[in-house]
Length: 119
Image (tube, rainbow, N blue to C red; front, side, top):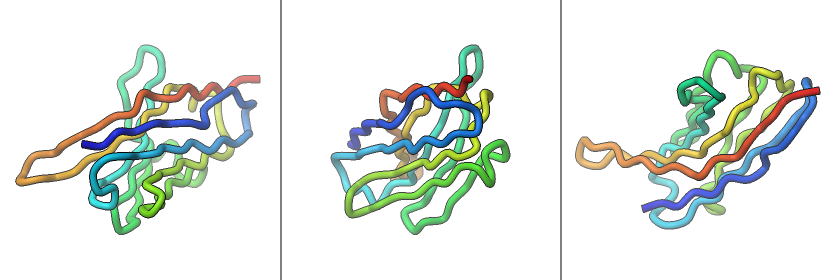
């Protein structure tokens, strides 16, 4: 199993920046596909970005060019640098870890951190 703890959320003005961090503990971190998801009030949870153990990244169209995901397999951490934030980025952001074992995905979630973009 993997335990995930997010930090770094908060209130920021439009155009500002935040950096989210996710600290992992438990099994071998480097084996996991790591991602950030978000859920705004009244909306479904959506993928923001993910990163493979080898560093291949994937972004939602809505954040391309503004957000950057990275990971440190030694520190067992994943980060989300968010720049040029917009009010529509307001949501609870969740760290996610996935591992494929024998055809089955094992998925773990953090408790979430609130990001509010408002003037």
